Length: 124
Image (cartoon, rainbow, N blue to C red; front, side, top):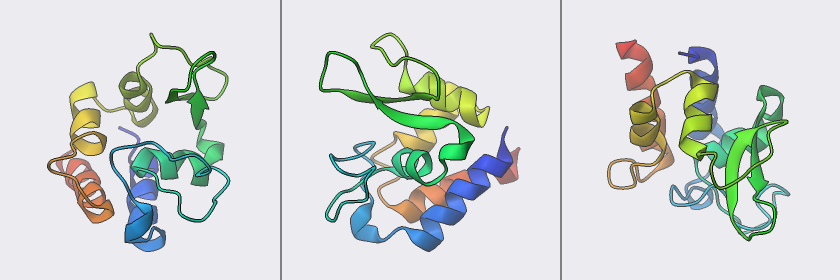
C-alpha cells in the first residue's frame, strides 16, 4: 500500500478542496484540469490534477467523449479499467479502490473520502 500517496490525497481533500468543488460522481467536469470556475471533480480528479508528478492522469479516450484515468505514458482505451489503474497506483485491491473512490452511497463528501483513506491506512 502506498500510504504516502494516500495520505497526500486525504490531506489535500481535507485542507484545500471546497465542498462545492467536490463531486464523487465524476472524475472531472469540462475545464476542471484548467481550474476553470464552476468545475467539479472527485478525489481521483483532484489527485491527478494537483499531483501530476505522481504519474496518474485524467485522459480522454481517443475517438470518444469519455474520459478515464490512466498512468502517464499509457494510451487510454475502453479495455483499461480506471479502477484497475487506481488500484495499481495506490497498491490497494480493486475492492478497496471501489469502496474508497466509487462508493457514492457511503462517501458523498470530500471528508467522507478522506476518512475512508485514513481508516484504510490505520487498518494496514
